[in-house]
Length: 382
Image 1: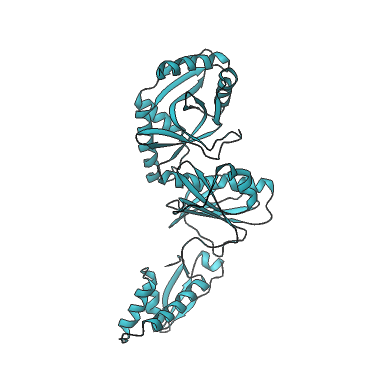
Image 2 (image 1 turned 90 degrees about the vertical axis):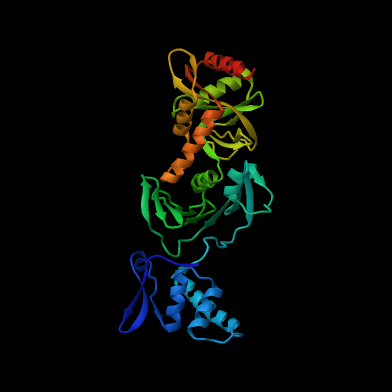
C-alpha cells in the first residue's frame, strides 16, 4: 500500500489535514483531518511501512507495553481502511471484477484473463491452456466501470488514437476515439493490465479490446525476452521462415506464392514473436496477426528472415550481421516507449542478427520471386 499522488499534508490553525489537489479535486476526493496518532501513521504509510511496522511506530511513540500488539494492529487496520475508502492510498492493482479466470499461452508466456467470455472465445481460445501452477507472466482484467480515481502522468507519446502516459508504477493508456474502451493501466513490469470500459460489449468493441491488450502483451513479452517482428511466416523444412518489409511491400503476396506453389503451411500473416532458447532463435505462436486471420499456437526454430523490396526483377543478396541486426530492429513492434525499452530491443536485435540467416530480396509479385528465394534457402540449409 502507498499514498496516492495528488495529496498534501499541511497544517491549518494548529491542526494537520490531508488535502487533495489537481485531478483529485476534479474527482471529488475528500480531505482528512489527522490527530496525533493519524499523523504518525500517515508518515509511516508514506514510507511504505508494513502494518506490523506501523503498529511498532505507535508502540514506540506511546511506550506501550508488550502484549497489546493485536490491539495496535486493529487501530492500524482501521486507519489503513479509512485511507483506502477515501482514496488517499492504493494497494495492488489487481482486484476482483466478477469474471471467471481463463488462461492462454503464447510460447513460454502465460496469461491470466479475467474478462468477457466473448473476447476470449473469439481471440484467445485457440491458445487456451489449463490453470497455471505458478504465477502468470501477465494478468489482464476488464472492468465495465469508470476508474474510481483518474490517474495522470507525463505524456510519453500520443496520436489521434492513443495517449500514453508515465503514471508512476503504471503506464496509462487513454483511447479518445473508442466508444466503450476508455483507458488501460499497465504495470511497468508488464505483470498486469486493467482495462476500463463503458457501455455494452458489441463485436467492434470486442475487437478493440483484443487489439489494446496487445500493448500489455508486448510489454510482458519484452520483460521475458520475447520480441515481435512485423512479418509473415510459413513452415518449411521444419523451420519458420519470416518475410518482412514495409506495409504494402508484399509479405502476404510472397508467402501465398510459397503456399500455392510449394504447399507450405502459413504460420502468421502479420506478427511473429521471437525468443532465444539454448542459443537457438525460436518463433512462437501468438494470437495477433493483423487482418490476415492466420496464426498458429505452435512454435518452431527460426530458419531465417527475408526482407522484401519491390523491384522490376528478382534478385537476392545475403545480409551481413550488422545489416541484419539493423533490419530486425527496424521491423520490431516491441515497445520502444522509453530508452530502457529501446535498449532491450537493440540487444535482442543484435543477437538475432548474429545468429540467423538473413537476406534482402528485390522481387516482383510473380511466382518466380518465390522460386528465387527457395533456391537461396535450399542452398543455405543443405
